[in-house]
Length: 355
Image (cartoon, rainbow, N blue to C red; front, top):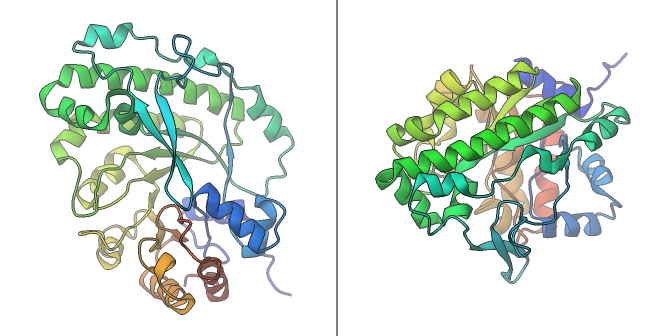
């Protein structure tokens, strides 16, 4: 009798437990335009039917309901006071921050006096209600913590980076307010999950295309302590840690494993210096799982379906003996042919187990 196959949730849990699942798990990251087009092209009525069609183990994401439509002092802004403009780039749209509410502040006291969001601004009951009807097929993902990305929206990107070097007191004030919010916000979400939440995202884009965006000293001074605290909070609820950082982030990986305690590293942009798959497998393959690695800058959008299939097979060979979740190395973009996306998932499904 053939062994019973695992559910998507069981595959994720096997990865977190340091085991090999019945087959290589898969995940899906894309822009909204790609998701809509893929469902249309494959005649899938909804996200779940698409995931079943392509054997995708994508977790189910949950979030509370925000009670406020905008910042109390600015009807044009989001809850954080940031205003956005929708930009069309030809094949899709994205929101660009156009007003940064903290941009002109020059002291920590001004930062603290700002009307910051409160965890009380959210209703957490939808999480409990949704999980009460969940069938347990998919892993449950909830919460994120990516403070510097938000910092850049609040202060403006150039000013945000300058603060780390010339205005550390302002950086501490902003990052402190952001952490205080998310520490309680995430705690309430975890409590509402009542033991059913499996993983959470902690993130910061630490690398660019050609090298790190911060020095290791800057990372340790401003980001590492709060990332550890947030990971500790999740672990206190039995929740696993998925970590996202783009680009050439090799100098930070040891700290992320040893101090933050990450369990999965995403997205493995192996074309960036220091992120070569062979080196990551050699140095960290016995300690963490890898997520991503299918190149969406060149191969997925501009290669042939055979190029995509060959790269999937190459990754499977390189990650042999490790734990790997096959996925694009960041959001699939609208220039990517549907045939290439299908080739990625069909090829990994044909390969089966990573042994």
